[in-house]
Image (cartoon, rainbow, N blue to C red):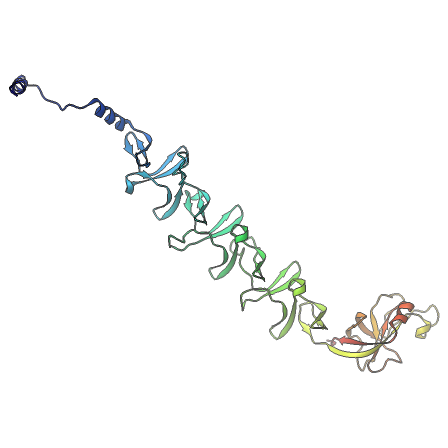
Length: 369
């Protein structure tokens, strides 16, 4: 002890300052911390990034890849979902050192739900409508963290308009016809972003056929009889729901529909039908003469005409008719033996006319406008 006091007294007398003794190990550690740069993984497996010994925080771009270093957690590298200034991003959770923490872009599946991370918007998660490679998708806009950004499927109502997002086609928005649980709907095919995919209602024309989509119910395609503005229409389920025109057999009888689909109430008669040809002798003409109808049709020159002879007091001349077994025709002729509920159908072939014989048939008569 006396030696130590003496040494201290001597040092003081000589004016020497006393410095703390630092081990060589401590010196090396301090120098390493001062010069530290790049990624460092601590003993807990947490990654940090140093620049000249200083921990970086916030967004970091390294080798063209983005990372997020959380200032609220000591600058540690984030993985999984992160909310930065109100925007969501996803940072890879793969334990591979070449992947972990890298910001993901494009489609992401997480917990069996799909999200879209927009590379054109800094990698942030999209909400609402998104067009990816020409296909439209919808990502939930609900602010609930458990819902926001999740890709929707099935029916979607947006701004009072309905869309269908097809789970069988990657969740993309459908256009054109779609069958949902046995019902048909039509979704606009117009390329205008404000129209495409919108569920149509009312009358639509597709491939030169008309259909009716019932906006008073669920927008599905109607079939069968349908009334609008006191007019009746028939939408044929056997023709894919298309509106019928002309003569059609519905409910076991022939009905007539105008070119615009409106039903015309026909008169149904049961008549006795015989047949006649364009043979001059049979019709009271000289050999070689042409045979004409009462309304001036040349049956010799036009053997394919479908005409019938009628009693004008029963069926007015010029009436369009449908004769069971004969087809669509027009009442354009008369005959001395054609009285009351009797008609004569024109068949140019003598053999076929003979085969017709005498029949009891139904005839449907359109009113003359």
